[in-house]
Image 1 (cartoon, each protein chain N blue to C red):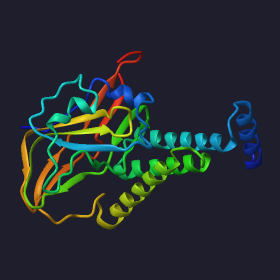
Image 2: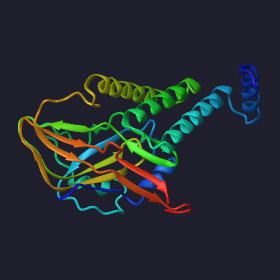
Image 3: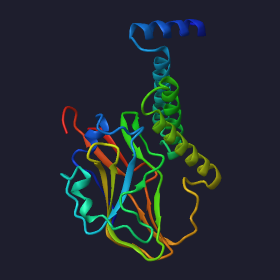
Image 4: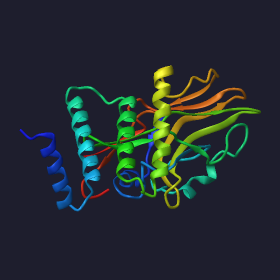
Length: 144
Length: 122
């Protein structure tokens, strides 16, 4: 099954308001298992129950995105960051069905977006669990 | 034609009229120039690459730090600048943003998310 991108109903509003400071805030990416996307989920507590437990190279709620770039260019908002990976060591990482990105600096850790893997993914011991973002960015937003 | 001195004087007068520092106004002018350059490139059909975005954001943040060195978020801005520089250095050395890991593994390739916002509402 295909990987799909999902965003909470509040996502694009955060981009245009002061709820998230994209130049300074820390954005964290987490892995989840058996999560079903709900667009009304907008804070970390809505999704925390399905996060993978710490172990084998995965540490819960700690993987910060690096080189986050976010802002408007030519009327379009683009959010992007460097690809991420976890190195499985001492056992496997997973299974995981989803990833969540959230703003750890914001009040109540506002959810930014969800990535549905479309399948259950596991990185075996000695391998990497990698998430590669699109060359054009993680997401774009524009007034319609 | 206006000389650089005329432009500088005009900038300072405009800043005073709008109640902002000349440095802040100069920063805004720089941002507008960059935006115009990017829009011109888009008109020519050249999409903005990840490297373009990193260079643009690095320049914007460095201008912000210079204009507002006492801002409470200046340390976060500096950390972000260091990340951008590392990313750009990796592009230079490895032609990709992260050094190659050399390990096998699961690779999830994420499609671009496209969001729409209606003016005046959600």
